[in-house]
Length: 540
Image 1 (tube, helix red, strand yellow):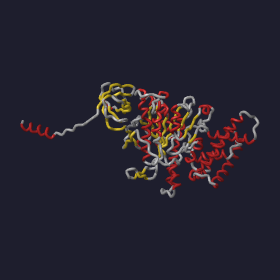
Image 2 (cartoon, helix red, strand yellow; image 1 turned 60 degrees about the vertical axis):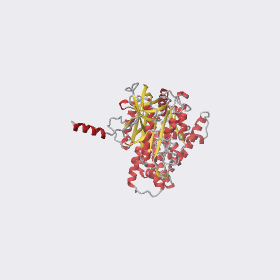
Image 3 (spheres, helix red, strand yellow; image 1 turned 90 degrees about the vertical axis):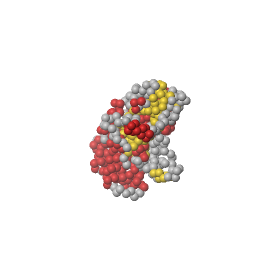
Image 4 (cartoon, one colour; image 1 turned 180 degrees about the horizontal axis):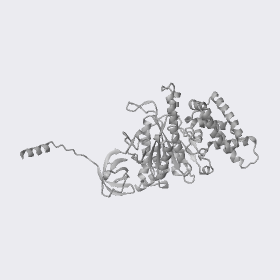
């Protein structure tokens, strides 16, 4: 008995206890994915807080006596009086190459039924955008595979280009085409890099390699129907594009807080690849629904509302998101603490989508996002229903990066194309009021009609840049002027097939040189003349 007492006394004497301080509060109100909590005196803005049952929330409103939080997950099990704890952490999302080909929710959890994703790293969902010194200018093209965009509204790696238009005008189709085209260009780059020497001798060669390097794509679906997201994933799988794509889904059936977080989560995934020195592309489809979700959350948190019932910081909502897209510097830079840091030279390009109501681009959210981005691709309902696909309004669309995101061959072709199209639009409007036109005006209108036909393109069929240059060069040089307008599309298909089968060297030379020099131009001229004559005989 005495041995037992001694043993107990020894255990008590050697027992080491540690006091842990924890900030705890209680739920006073809960509903619609929002909780009001009292007692969390030391909570910080955007801090992760823990509810019973392993459900987490995010502290958004810090008021004098209470905290307003959004609940990340199922809020139906949370009751008034439940205990809430602070965690001292910010919200993070798993990132890594293991996520490629998967569909995840706004918290990075897989929802495609293909099992768990074993990632090794996580990134904060909210992050301050990189500064001016750590960036470099946008100068490397990101090819969409769409002739009208690559020629007249070029997009560069690290740019933010808005796609804006009414519903059902082909906004998502442009985004999907761009994703599919990245897969095609990465196959070409892998084949060419196998043949070339690994050592790059000059800056120009290095920039060529950068231009053809594969781009990782992140598609963020905000407030879309689940069936539409499933169709989009099936379309990407059909074209083999899911191998280089991650889909972040916050569908219409998800709570507003998840729709609010989804774009930031997608951006964190994109930033991981950018920090690895890789090129990434992120598509936000669409930021109108993102603003609606944020408005709903803000109204439930009882934040003061402003124009169209949006909260006062709705501009900051999108500006802090889109400013995270950049092309990072390749050079090592000295930080304020004296240390050197290599920023890797990666890039994150964003294509935000905005849905307008009855073509009103002067509404609150559209004007906000137009002012944040580096240009916009404007799609028009009238053009869409008139059979112009993509329904691109070239007059209202602009890229503020311009020719610096084009190679020399495309820049040379696009300059004449833009001029011919602008003259055609002006003369076509004038010709409606006059029946007697001089031959020069008639010729200009006829060429404009053929250019318009060439710029039409079926969905999910992106065109490689060398093929774009060949056909656009032919139409701007007047080789199609004598062909009937209804035969122009047929000519394009047969001409490209002819080049791919019998004149591979010309396409290869355009792809490698990125410039139409005198020798290459003569070759293209000779081949085009012969083919046009052969095609004319076939038409007759």
